[in-house]
Length: 200
Image 1 (cartoon, rainbow, N blue to C red):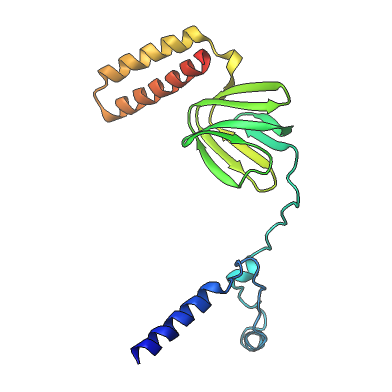
Image 2: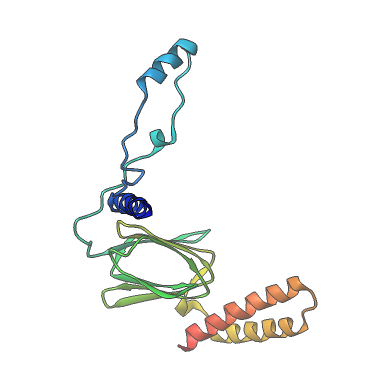
C-alpha cells in the first residue's frame, strides 16, 4: 500500500515539474461575463473593477539578432552627457567590479562606485570619472547610466586630488562623531579612486 502511494505521489510531482508554466504577461486576460452582467445590474453607472491581469502588457519582442551597436544615455542631475549615442562598448565601475557592456547584454541594474567609466567608439575612448549612480541595461541594447557626479578624466587636476586626499585623510584621523567619520571616509574613498584613475 505504501509503495503504491509513494509511486502515485512521485508521478504527480514529476508531472507537475514537467509542465511549463506561462509567464504572467503571456496569460490572456480573462473577463468573467456573468460577473460583469451582475455588476451592471448593481452599479450601472460604474465600470466593473479591473483585475491585476487587466493592467499587464505583453512583453516587448526581442530582436532575432544582436545589434551591432550599444545605445548609451549618460545623464547627470544637471546635464545630459550622452543622449542616444551609438557606441561599441561601455565599461562601468559597478560595485561588483568593472563591468563591460556590449550590444545584446543581459538586462541588468548595477550600482556604480567611484571609478572610471569608459565609452568605446571604434578606436576612440572617452573616459569619465563617476562618483556613484546606477546603470540600467535593457534587453534592446540600450544602456541608461545615471551618475550623481561625473567629470571627463582629462579635466581632473592631479595636484587637487592629492591635496583633497591628504585633507580627508587628516579629517578621518581626527573625526570624533560617526557623521564626521562617515563624511571623511567617503572623501578618502572618492579621492583614492580619482588618484588611482589618474595614475593608472
